Length: 109
Ligand SMILES: [Zn+2]
Ligand SMILES: [Zn+2]
Image 1 (cartoon, protein in one colour):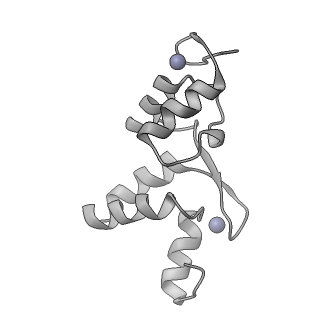
Image 2: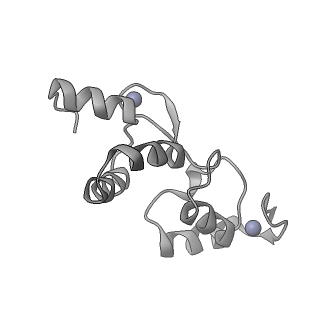
């Protein structure tokens, strides 16, 4: 059993994983904090920074999904943003690599 770093509730990781998977397709194991299912879902719903990290499969940099996403929201249309979120459910590529890639028309995507 673990203690949630957000609400203090004692929870089982298996249960949290299941709960999170019902709402999000992302990997629960990418959370840097120990969060119960409810807090993990809340963190994603609220674009909470500093909790969910993915490591870029292109450059190896570890990036904060919610932070990158927020930066995107300013520069992308709603449709593009939606596509990006979908993209991140299957690929781990940081924004830097994504933009470089778009500019150079390379084919990592
Ligand atoms: Zn919690
Ligand atoms: Zn990268």
